[in-house]
Image (cartoon, rainbow over all chains, first blue to last red; front, side, top):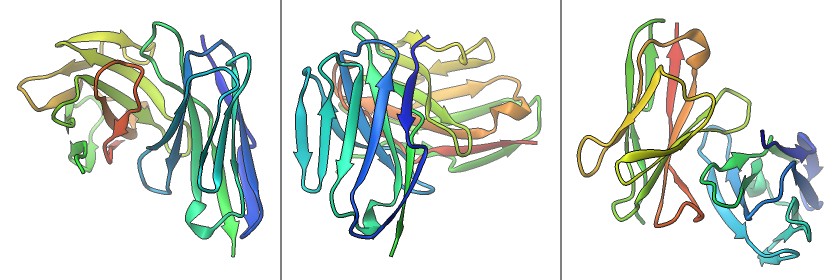
Length: 111
Length: 114
């Protein structure tokens, strides 16, 4: 079945440093979504990428969808304590409603 | 801003008992989902529901599980005979139109099977 892996599993950064998480799917995706889950919270939608090679920015967050539509990345510039949480990518395959979540990257910030 | 709500927030049950988890999706949404998240692990898709029927389900969603939309607002997940390994956080989610839209998650129900 489809698998979506993320690396790293954990990331500890000093406040102000950058952070990147990488997402890889075993199959080609129709689109990829990114969610953030705060400790003890529920997944909150961040963004959706649809086009091959697409890059989208939200303030300090930059999202990229690979040319082959099998991988994606999330980059946070100058992390803040509010960025703490687990970041999940989630992929949708063509003609499929099953959103397959990645393994997640848990970000902790050292003040 | 409209939200997905879920009840109860926590449920403790004995192994073998039936549980019903309830969700109220956002009112104009048409697609509904259940996910589960075992503590410390990733979010896993269970089932999607559209037009009063299951549109897709995962391998996890076996005969122990069922979903229902008993009225115009509630969306329920029933686990007939709970097992220890059913202990997890269960999230309901909904989307506006197609299955390709961003999903809005509820706060979850933490189920503990003893």
